[in-house]
Image 1 (spheres, rainbow, N blue to C red):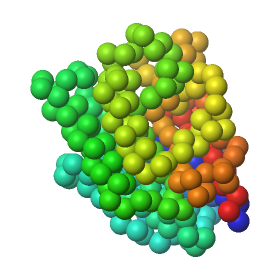
Image 2 (cartoon, rainbow, N blue to C red):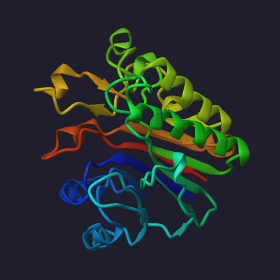
Image 3 (spheres, rainbow, N blue to C red):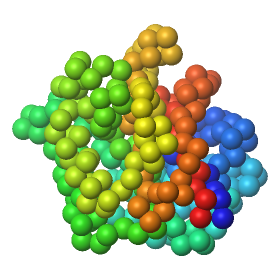
Image 4 (cartoon, rainbow, N blue to C red):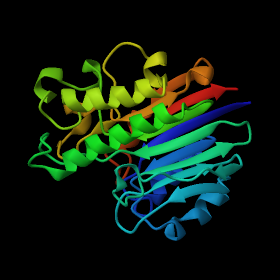
Length: 262
């Protein structure tokens, strides 16, 4: 069985329903994981998605904030959600495909503006969230699993447009990278995107603040696809659909793809 998966922080699934449909029509991934849906589950516009062949959904939502959803052409079984750090946020959901692969869809807290938990509660929440992810992976080693989502951290020097300038900017600080890598190591997760594209600058997010985001190209790789070692070698074809950042009324994130032959 071969299937292609995409992950995309959509920044309101209802507002950006047209470009979600555009992606489904033009790219046709078998599974699309969305973050920051900003919608209760019952108000996600599934009618159009079903018309395009995406008849299966596993989601957790809340009004106006957060929210994660897995849309699929393939049957899914809801495997629940974990409220890491006890924030009461819809930031995680898991589903299992019929081939036994479990997909975890995460939306890690952004962390606010100041990388100091003493003065910025949101930064502390982000670090606590990552710590609880780490502890969960230690407690129960994931197998035959894929983890995707907006993890809100660009870990490598070539995951940002300027490593030195961003060392004190939330999403690339050493303490965040350390926490993310600890969670990754705890589950022995393989960074599939960088397995396929091992070298060079690679981004999935460009700020709305840039007048010309593409020309300025001050991006960060905040969106990730990981897999457990037992299936990571089956992954290939990783790419970022950069063009989607320039679609009408876009998200500030671009979709990230990977294909698995299992």
